[in-house]
Length: 174
Image 1 (cartoon, one colour):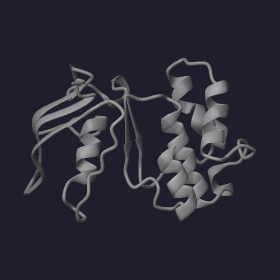
Image 2 (cartoon, one colour):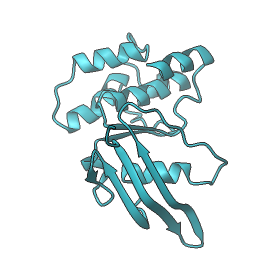
Image 3 (tube, rainbow, N blue to C red):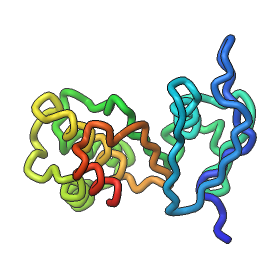
Image 4 (cartoon, one colour):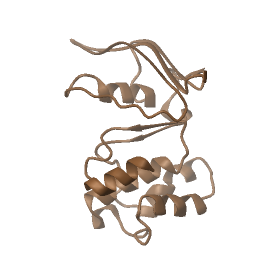
């Protein structure tokens, strides 16, 4: 059996007066697609934020490909996050937003950006600013920006909610 690509062991997150996540154990295999479902406030986003490194667990351990990462900063984890609010840079074009992470890691841009633009059906809109495209297109830019980095784990915080049903189905399949 394959080793988990992501392994959460006894992970909890306590805020003053509120336990957001309690003793979560979860192992995800390479290529596996997993969804956290539950009502608002049950800890879904907090769990994603702990895996991404934006929150530290109060207790427990998080492993990525067998390496403990819960004490590493976000930029040292091969994890990409697509946030519900897109988190795009308003002064950067579609292409520049997608290239941002690659440039930060010193990776040449070009072919990967073209491929991911085609994948999310944004070819021809590379030079537009986020304010010049629709909400669904902004969501696809955020998704493309994460996919182009080829992360070990891709975390999605309701990333497909603004897409029409047909495009949502296609992007989910891709």
